[in-house]
Each structure stands twice: as C-alpha cells, then as structure tokens.
Picture (tube, rainbow, N blue to C red):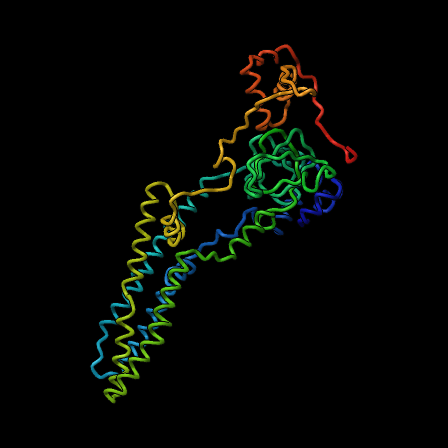
Length: 408
C-alpha cells in the first residue's frame, strides 16, 4: 500500500515502516514477491501510451476531413440519384483525405518510434536494501517499502520519506520550477515536507537513506502527468483550423448553398436541377487540396527539425514554432547569468572590514553542504583579495548548522 505524502511527512519513522510493512534492512524476498503481484512496474504511464488506433484517429479525424467526408457523402448520394452522375469528384476528395491522413500518420509513427528508442537508451538504477544487503536494481523493480541509499548525483526513482540525511540537497526544479536545490532532512518537524523526496528529483550533494512511499502513477509526478495528459491544449493552429471550418460550414454551406438552391428552384422550376447545382456549389466551395497542402507543409517543417535532432510528436506544434521570433522563459538560469557578486562586507559600524570577508570565506570554504550562489560569490571575492591561501592554516573539526527557534 502507499500512503498520502502529506500524511507521511508528519507521522513517525516507526509508523511509516509499520504502514508499509517494511523495516530499515529493507524488504524481504517474500514481501517483494507479494508486491510484484500487487503493483505494476515503477513507470509513469500517463502521456506515454501510443497505439496504432490512436494515431490513426488523430491523423484522419479533424475538422477538414470531417467536412470533406460530409461533402463526399452528399455528392455520392446526388450522383446516385442523377442518371448521368460523375464519381470523379468523389474519387478525388477521398484520395485527398487518404493522402493527408497517411502523411500525418507516418510522421506521428516515426516520432513515436524515435521517442521510444530514446527512452530505451536510458537505464536508471538505484541502490536498494533487500534483506539487509544493498542490491543495484532497475528503478522499474522498486516497490513501496523499499529502502534506498542515496548519494550525490543519484536520481530519486520514486516518492520517498527520508529517514536519515547528511548535508542532503535535492534539486526538484522539475516540480517547482526553482533553479536552486533545497536542503532536505529526516526530521519531520523542520518543515511541512522537508523530509519528502519526489520522483525525478536528484541529489545534488550529501547522502541520505529513504523509504519508498509511492511508485509509478501513484507518485506526485505521476498524478501531475495524468492531469496534464487529460487536458487538451488548444493551440493557435487548432483555433485557425476551427475558424476556417466554421466559415466553410456555417457561413458558406448552411447559408449560400440553401440560398442558391432556392433561387434555382424559383428561376428554373426544376427541383432536381436546383439540388444538383447547389451540391456542385458546395463541392466547389470546399478546398479539397487544403488538408494535403497543410499536412505536407507541416511535415516538411518536421523533417527540417529532425535534421537538427528535434523530435516533433504532433504536426500541429510546427505552426507554434513558426510563430516564434524570440523564446523567453521564466527560469532563472535562462534569463540571467546565474551569478551573484559580493560588493561590500561591512562591520556593525557600516565600515568595510576585511575581517568580515575572511570569516565569511572560511565559513563558505569549509562547509560540507552545497555551496550556493552566495557561497560562491564570497569565495570568489576573497580569492580576488588574495585570501584564498588562509584556508590552509585551518582544519575543519565539525560544523553546526544555523537553526532559529520560534521565539527568535
């Protein structure tokens, strides 16, 4: 069983082990066999499903093909009714639908295969305790209750509750959008979720021991992926296609065609001839070649991007690329130099004091945790003032993290 993340962050370590039916030495072999029957592999499936039927549906069902299909059916019925019906127009429209759909389907299939090939090249492993012995396992073989050992550079293969940490900094920008790593601790009293690590985060520095509380689609990232994959994003391309379709169907088909039919009935007096002429007008107003031209153009853009090592999963996204002149994001490291510069170091009187810089440098130099941007700025400034060599005069005995009580 897996338990809620918020709840796990606040209960004791012993209760976490009890609920997950595990222990510090890790899962037993018998317990692992039972979990294999209870859980799927540790894979996030949302957004990765791909089937031929789904690709065909996306390739052939769109506003333009639906419009052409309706026109084709009407034209077919009209030709059957007419004694000298000509089916050439029907053949042309059907051919346009098939060609447009096949181009889109082939491009989608190529992208899916390329994406699957890239995924198969990635094989992540983790150090997992089983019966008290560390085993190197694929992340797909991890289950709730597994105890995992983490060190610098490791990726979290599941949502975990940290039970032991040492200077552990975790980069979780995938979830929060923040560029700087955050420090995690095993003590649930420090902050609401500081003792929780989420899937796809990575250990920047330090070591840790964690027990898995959720895997696969049950993880926080898996639930986010499910919500995103179920949300249809309407792009400007989709809006444009819908607008043209509405123009053809509502303003032309539903207004002009009946109007032409009525006028012909009044002027010529033949119901059959008026209907045939109105249908001819509808077919003439329909841009049969537009889906093929549109799909071919987008496919050409996809091939151009493919030559530059870019995989395009949806052809409609090509139009979005074409709209861009400048791409901006709100991530710190893409809009700034990701650099802090120390300008002044003053004492309690507000005067510049090299002693302040020296003590700050020793603190930043000897700390065993992650050296953040402020530490790097202090070290760089100290070295520019020839203070870099003073660290050799000192020896690190231990460090005490700065903590503030509620009263302070």
